[in-house]
Amino acid sequence: MYRVKPSRRQIKKLTAFEKKTSWRYSITATSIRHMWGIAGSHQIQFLDALHRDHAEVEDGIRTGKAVLRLLPLHNSEDLANAEPDTMRFRLCHLPARLARQARRRYLRIERTWPWASAFTTSWRRLTQLPAVT
Image (cartoon, rainbow, N blue to C red; front, top):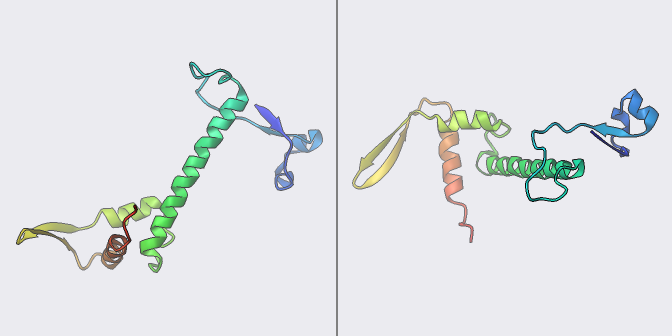
């Protein structure tokens, strides 16, 4: 447990005890006691910095997924704001057959599938993006 001075944004959310003491208290629950070979890793400040750094990584992943979702699906009403699990279910569990003809492969998608056009549009848009160099 550690305490910090609350920012103006956090003042409205303080408990009665925190308002009385004018400190904001936080609890970090972790299974990490200390990291071998790293001096000071047993202190709460180190663990807090470790968890904040991990939160930044998760935010970056979430932002990347949102940008990727907006690139191919920005005009699809039901998928533009969908959660990653919903998108994965609707776009990756597609009823299709992989067919070969004249040394080429074709993905034959069932036309009655509700997200067939969304899948083909997103695939076309993603493959037309320039390669990262």
